[in-house]
Image (cartoon, rainbow, N blue to C red; front, side, top):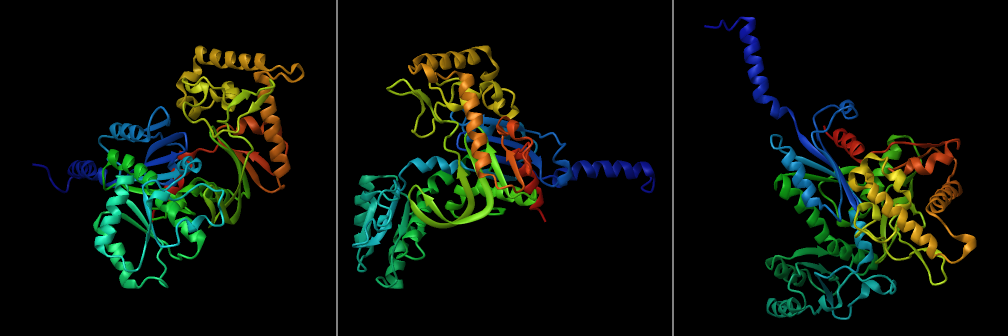
Length: 463
């Protein structure tokens, strides 16, 4: 019989209790950066001190190119790699919503308006993309009843059987509270997601609410992909403004990554950053702009001042009708993507940097075929074809010429916009563009990692 007062009894009891309670002392979380074309993620213990982030080895870490591996698949892989440590929280920074900027929205959204208010949101922005499907705009009178609304809904479902969201633009000067309640209650009973415009006479407010509704489906897909992997009780925190939050408007997601970099600037005592990764090149400053000139029209929304470089790394390099090498003005080619991704036959700006890409850990993991001789040879062959297709002998550009021109163009842009204040060049391609700027005062380069910075901020948000 063991003496309870003995040292051996104490150690036996302590080790047993330590084993039993240790799962309660951990909080497995996921750091996720969700870009337009790629996602990178890692698992970490939310309860570990911030000082352990830099040197810790994640239990799961992976990056995927989204046209080849979906977010749903990535999250499922993370869950499978962590069978004994259920994920409780996911911290997300995203610019995925930027994929919507080339599209008209509102294909599954009913817009309920007074008769005569149809398409009023577009009056001052007639050249912008649509936020409401004309066939799904429902003009109604204050005398509308449940019976008349049911008939209208049946008609609209013949246009689109998947409609599941509704935006109300019902001024209280034209409708009583009781009439508005009747209309809203009808759609609520029909299991619609409801969006109400705070100021129905303010076109910017109308656009903002329509954008929130039109973006709802994409947001819900992201949430679904995460919760399908980790369970319905998983806490999902998006970076909104200057903190992680579970509550937000969908418009906030369009600025998640910009606001995160702005917060990084504050913490690093910087005033500006030039960001270069494989999908976008831009400059982000501490200052805010109050209006967003969105593809769907002007919206009053304070956001970090951001200047996009004149070209995207996903822009296609092609030869025009007079034999001159040009950069296509078409939207970025995320699918099938660059040649280095292993599927494309179109040459993108990103392909010109194939040698530099394979030396980057994250990009090499996104494009595993990048290290093979066959892909490098395919890239080089494609640039030789482009060079031969150019008929203006004085300005025939090789792959090396294009690479040097890119570096010169970006360097010139930086020097012209640089304001001699504390500034960093960050991103996975930042080292390539910073080589010629090492001696510029107040301008430095940094190895910025999305998952590392997300982990730091997630831990810092804990009480």
